[in-house]
Length: 405
Image (cartoon, rainbow, N blue to C red; front, side, top):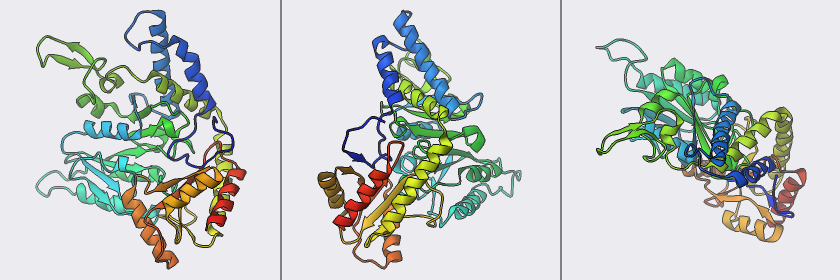
């Protein structure tokens, strides 16, 4: 990882540091930088090839199926907004209250937001009941779960607040049983564990390059082609058309990823993201996972040993999770604690509600009740680890919190 010596970065969940593979890929391509899909010269042809190879590499990394589209976007928020624009008329979207704003705000009115469940099994029960109600047959019509407007389930794979993992494959099976599709926000899971669209049997998946060690402004939406090819272009402009005539409405839009990638694409972002995907695909992900889990256990056990520090969680303390922990220091303002950690100890953590306000506020209330505290601040702190994190970083944070608390 690239980084600044002496600084302890424990804010990977917001933006991960740049991987050397991403920086090297960008540096190698920069002398050749030119237009994509728009020129016959050697530079343009090389850049077009690099862009489409990047698309293939990202698709391979995510286990896409034949016929799936890989659409480059700016980030997860952009990708999910694109999908929201592509929904067939009348689609009902079912989400949970534990989502990031990117998976709460883009969906149309009339969407269903289920409460945060007490555990993963509760999520399956709640979704099954909700979809059963939505798919209840009309007594006057054919008794088929496939009847009625489309339904899309939209769920995170790992919480950006607590790091807890959601049972995506099991949720997908519930959705299938009711004839619904499922979209997954993999922004927090993909940097920590393999994600395979085909194995999970999900219809759509979105992620951000800046959380996957490729902070060059690219994200991706992958998934089934039919809704994407039938929808109006996400952006209208050059590159998204196959024909534009003289008349105002004489336009034929492209099919495939180009339909939603109007304008000059983010070549360097796509190439950087693909380089990281390739590097991770070649790495020993199991060993990386074990190392991260050891650091995560050390961090959580250290926080639990500190007086007045309470961890936020949705499920039980043993629920599977990635390297993200949110917590509060009783009697201390979280913004002030974060500022002191930065100023006095060169430690960077996140403070606030983490673009998941409904969930974070609920968890703060639950932490106060669980700990019998009435002096918790209105916002939380979040420490998140990644490939560049070390035991020394975790111990430095714990020692600093002990001094501040």
